[in-house]
Length: 199
Image (cartoon, rainbow, N blue to C red; front, side):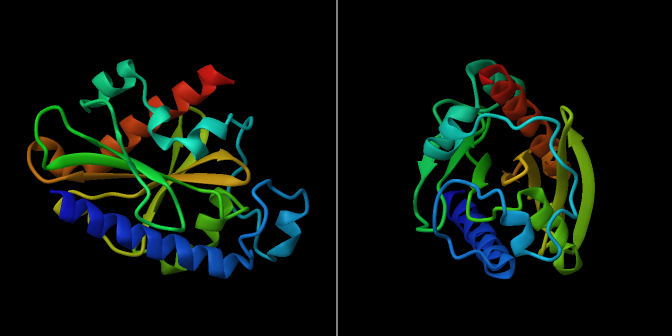
């Protein structure tokens, strides 16, 4: 189970690194620049967030985005396990309460200053691209590989106009293996609800 999750995370890291390279950002400062959209001619192609959500805790400890109630709703065990295996991003993974072959991982992507617009700008490279609303916030199911038939789905959620978060379930067994995107959406809804409560 862990090796499968690590492979999925590695694919996500590669995709995120490609997005960073394409956005023209140098990975410098940590605070979003007000002129960031001007640095990329295609910036702004994605929908805007209704109001920026607080992201300090999300960035410093991605495991903080899921409350006990949220974990119960999604069927995940607390605490999550922080993933710092990549020098490019920090994430968190939660295992299912029913099987260690099922998990959900979350990775905020501060390197991309265009938020969900950066994901929209890469649409032509994705094998699936399906916009969705997550509790009023812009989201899109999108990835360069289609892992849905094997229980993996990538959902991107814009939490500010400068920050997108990836939610990646890896479902190895059970009924939800046929609907990993539904699990991603359920998790993302719990995450956004928690972030709204922290605003």
